Length: 221
Length: 265
Image (cartoon, rainbow over all chains, first blue to last red; front, side):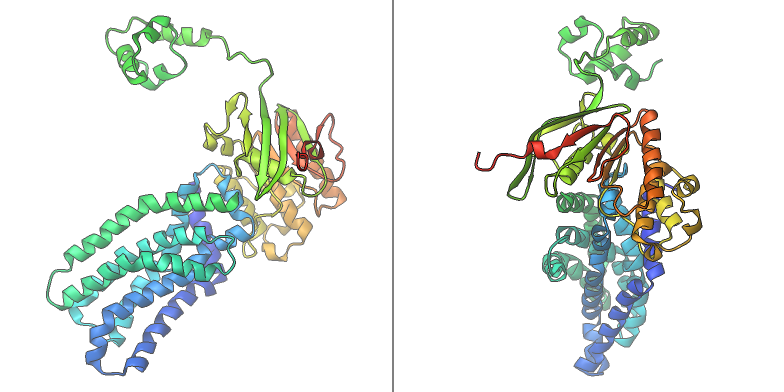
């Protein structure tokens, strides 16, 4: 196995062995979405109207909740310092950690989103667009979030600071993700929105590891 | 036909090529083309015949004029060191004198405030990847995950450096019976031994150890000393910080207290 694969496998094994970590994000997503029918009432018309936005905002918050664990535990126990001195460039390691993070959060969120959409009476034609949009959007959430997670290493109350840093950067993903569903519901083509989500991912995947690795190096100095 | 990359290596052997004033890529093109006036075998010979880089000192991992700043405080300044193959450098000094900081500088984790570090004449900033590949750094923390077993942990760290055979390393540090224990159940000394076993599990010419003896019992200390002496006899280089005197034959000592900047000076 390559060093890249080893790092992905280690992060997955750690998360699955601790179990709770991965499940918390899913539980948060499910519970928060279920709160909305209680809050706005059970009328299908209202729920149908807000469904895409609710699903996207909640998925975004669930992803945010889990960002800290990309680097934080490794920073605390000295693993990050040791990783930074491994032959594999830190940028590649950041990408590996983001991949593991997405497999543990973004992927389950993408799979479970259509089930929750049933609760909210989402229009039938929006389901494939929702899944495709989440599959394209959640990796960007992880990658952008990794920068915030790296920047807040060593900061006191890093969690709050992390939200303030990252949430504004999530807005484009939210806009195009929700708009893709809206377009499908309105009978328009969701293609441009999905392509913009893909473009965001194509930008984030090669660029954010450099920013996050620079921030990690700064934290380790 | 010799690959182009081969032709690029080393300085151009003739002065006339320099005189052309071509950028390297054009020079390579000229050489690779049919106009090349050197037989490839001839070229390889002339490359070999070039004298090695001339230097007054033997090849060493060396630092010169190093200064380190942590926050507002200048920790040390004007520090020089050189570690040749087979050498060990013991860093001593009171708490806060910069032993750990110097080791982090040597590892490339922190850039020096001033001065430079070089491995056998080449600055480590020129190729950070090569420097990372040649060093083992064991810091204060053991870098172990509570949920993973000692064998998994050692396998991971060795695997990141391309080594896969971890059992001898575990045996060396008397960890074979603990191999399947999760690290959270290990004592501080046992955790330290798992961290130190990384040194044996994969090879690296430079070891940077920050107080490696902390928490070790007498037997583990003896193992560590033996491992270090084996590393040195194989041409390895070591810098380690310590408070206790270590029985290392012919090891140089660098007292960080000698490089404290004068207050208000």
